[in-house]
Amino acid sequence: MVAALASGEPEAVVVGGGVRVPRLARVVPDAVAVGDGGAGLEWGRGPVLVTGGTGGLGRVVARHLVVERGVRELLLVSRRGPAAEGVEGLVAELSRAGARVSVVACDVADGAAVADLVARHGVGAVVH
Ligand SMILES: NC(=O)c1ccc[n+]([C@@H]2O[C@H](COP(=O)([O-])OP(=O)(O)OC[C@H]3O[C@@H](n4cnc5c(N)ncnc54)[C@H](OP(=O)(O)O)[C@@H]3O)[C@@H](O)[C@H]2O)c1
Image 1: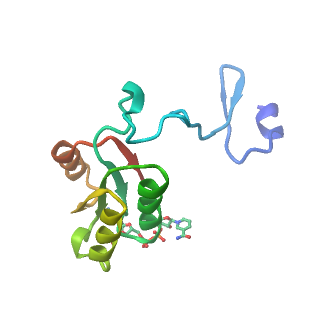
Image 2: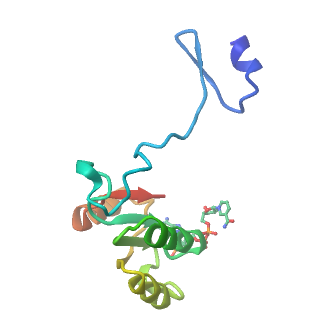
């Protein structure tokens, strides 16, 4: 407990006498680019689902995935989906960059709707 307080971390848990703090860690090695076959890894097979993919950050992420990461299949999801402003232009841009893009209306707070979405499209990775 003293060590947890002394760590200065905003969040910590004490487990079995040890202090644990949250950290993000890369689970796919840098060398394995999405879309290059993935060397047998499951990650990257099927479209990359971007939640809020028609919003401000979602668009930035989508461009990054296609241009910098070589993603060739994107599934952009928001509640308005294809009805969101500027979607046509976004899809055209990403398509010119070499990606196959689907834009789907789905409320990701609705578990059943998300289960259906994943079942219908298959998903290789999720950026939420
Ligand atoms: N922009 C920044 O600098 C910044 C910085 C730090 C954190 N953030 C956080 O990052 C997130 C995205 O920011 P943003 O600037 O990209 O916002 P944004 O332009 O408003 O985009 C949000 C996107 O999420 C979708 N969305 C919202 N609720 C949804 C739901 N239940 N199911 C599916 N899609 C949903 C919206 O579309 P629909 O309304 O059609 O569903 C929209 O496409 C926000 O949570 C924001 O607080 C942003």
